[in-house]
Length: 188
Image (cartoon, rainbow, N blue to C red; front, side, top):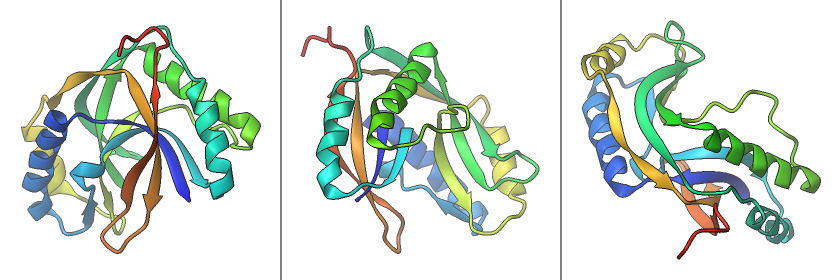
């Protein structure tokens, strides 16, 4: 199964993102927009994981803990690799060191299972859309500038998930496979 580890986004923030994508979509047919119901903060992409190994992955992730939950804000936007040559449009993530620490703990937990650590620095974001062909997206960039400062709210991160990603002609479909509490001290 194709899998990744991520933080889910609350429905109220997801609705604001849905509204933004709805406003931007007519401006450029060259962008394959993210499905708002699938927007998430990726902690680690795993790729293909054989089904017998999924239980090992879940077991390793269940040992990932931080001292407490933490807040994350969704603010601003940007482009990979940069604004002049965009291939991906994204929303920014505002968070303390806890988010990077969580991503590092996930990496550390999965490395003994054969998942190589990411070579690039952790760069949390929410993907808005990907360009089908390299090019300019001036209308979208201008529309985003007009909406500045972009702020979608913040939320408490107390859990993360192992997701399955199934490819389809209409984009990837994500399903939660396993749920993990961040803090051993959390009262549920």
